Image (cartoon, rainbow, N blue to C red; front, side, top):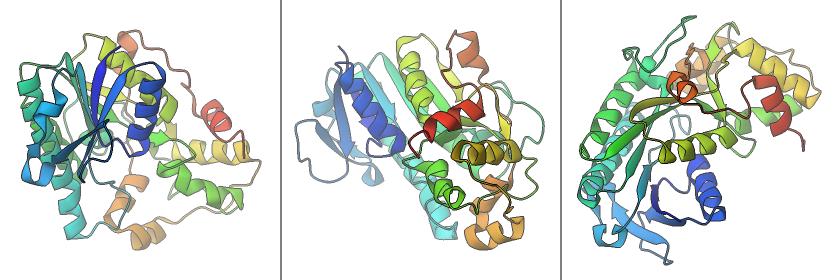
Length: 294
């Protein structure tokens, strides 16, 4: 049994990871910004870079998933600052603590936004970063994780996480259930996705491995937006007849629309070469399984 500390434990990935680790018998400490309310909580204040480091003594692994959701609000200049600062300050704070605590591994979140626009070109961990807003965020986010140089550090570049309880799929399901869903923009852009199930499995695989550096957490078979939306419609036995015009997304979502209309064809080369086997490598069976109760 390991002792594992997790930031961002209340988010989509974090809450699922906490539950799964505890089911497997691990002791999990959740970092919270408010006063602690239970024995499994540790207080921290990333804005002021403070943390109760004594309460983390003896941890074997630290998993950093903290950061404001990129799709939670319209991208005003103020919220773009929050997207950046919430990631960099939290990662800097926990990385400094990690360097002092010396756990076996530090797993720190990043995103496939690192690569910017890839078009139809498949990219792997060895490719250079992009030059748009989220690429810049990811560059600074990952740099903050380097403040724990004496600890094996894994930077997980996560794709679009699929689960009916939240994230992109959670927002799309109501539209598709009512038969008013469809492709976004041209439908030709690539989406690099991962089921929440395989996301949790891959994080635990990385904990137990000797891998370090950037790791793409995406399924090995990206899908175009048309393929994705058609597969979702089939899984729900609904039509996908109403495409969402790009201009409508830009009006409704502002800067975040570029992420839905953009193209990121990201391949999980490091995970695949290390022998990780995806339970859901293809989007159609994944969406069928995720919507089975609907």
